[in-house]
Length: 120
Image (cartoon, rainbow, N blue to C red):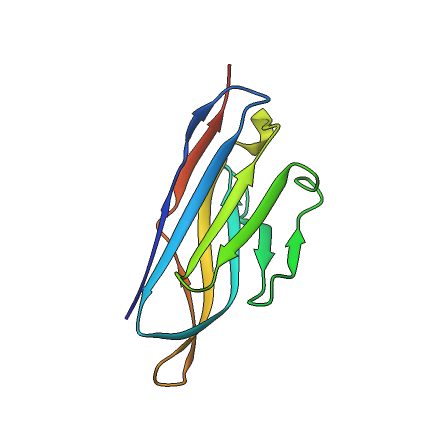
């Protein structure tokens, strides 16, 4: 019913930048919260940043001041601009969307993940 697809991951040197994108499509009436999570090897998945439909953003302490989340409500897109990247930012990054379907049912969906590696 709903597809969530991330793009933009890759290999970057410490101090560099990357921009992740996520597109949601399908039987969506509206998207409420859009968020980015990450999971490093051997660690639990953690929230990186989230943004409401009104634009209110929330960040993990570890990325405040370095990452910026934004969204395009008209196109069901969410972005994560990552600056001043550190090796500890290395992880698989997942997009998560909290939606109301056209059937008025609430649902939550994950993307397949995109690898971000910060290394010299």
